Length: 288
Image 1 (cartoon, helix red, strand yellow):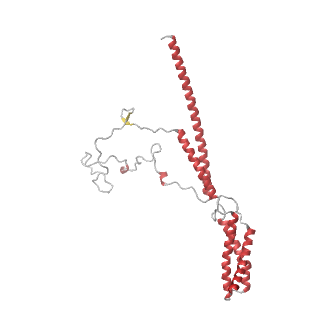
Image 2: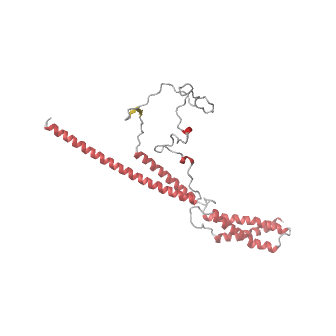
Image 3: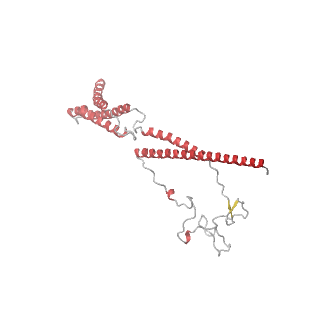
């Protein structure tokens, strides 16, 4: 071999070495990027889990207990099935079904699904079977070759990122829903308070009409009727609206007491009942 051929071979080897170094550096950079992305997604998922736990505690839902499937025994590297643990002579892993006259001492066979003895649990398989690809083992025995599907880490991380984005979107929607009270969730706090106090005043007006009718038949005297109309029923309506707003008008995730608009409620309740009584008197006089 001439000197020129040696020089060309050395240049080729040097170029291959530089190419290998560049490929190794690119692969190392790709792995660092994948690890960084995986750490970022892990932090996002951890934060989402904490936030969901907070929302669950706010609305009174605890974490669900572990299901019965989580306690299933596993074998090997986390496989959900495998031979059961032997607890006695009858708990051994069952072998292939036997048939009468197979040379095993005249066994009557394994009971079928219907529980009848002498019926094979599995049908006989034909002798001709499909040949599986085998790989030579160290002991020289052919075993089926396991073909693992190629997984692209970048694609899997991208799918995980999209799912995390979708979880963030649903989490924001859940937070918006959790910030709404159970009573009239789409109404503003002022409109909700007006509706609650007005409803309680209307209920007090119904009680006022009952007292007026009772006074007409002599069951209630005039002083008692006036006291209930001017003070008793309006006070009941006011405190009823106050309690309703405090119980069903408070969002689950908002700390503190919700706005109850006490002056407005006092005005509505202490004016609505007497005005209702005056309207009743005017209507009665007009119809009379």
